[in-house]
Length: 145
Image 1 (spheres, rainbow, N blue to C red):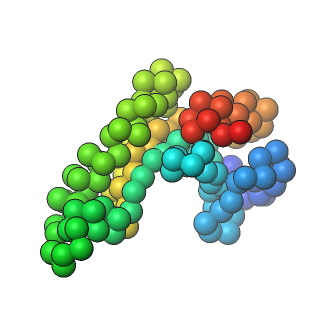
Image 2: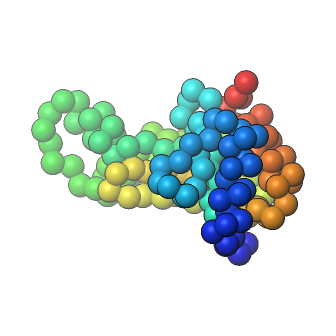
């Protein structure tokens, strides 16, 4: 998908926030995010035409679980490997459904977090179709009321 113009993205964001007041942003005029239930899944709409369902964990949280309170110096690769293992039960619950629905699975690793993302192209010029996709995600992932 092609990235929307700044004005078009701002209008779409406004419309989506009206339709889905649960959306929030981490940076001004950036992607919109929404929690999908209490188990930690996130829904994200990006201005370049991507919709993501993602589940992640912070590296600090994994390091705390691994070190059990001891001040061990753990390597980033080892922590990331354990984080991916930690994420698998929650991810495997929805993997087949998301893949069958056109999402593509990727793993994102930074110094702050590890996340499994399922991304799908979306036509941001077709708001009704986009909103249908967002409702589908909300209805199937995390069972949001």
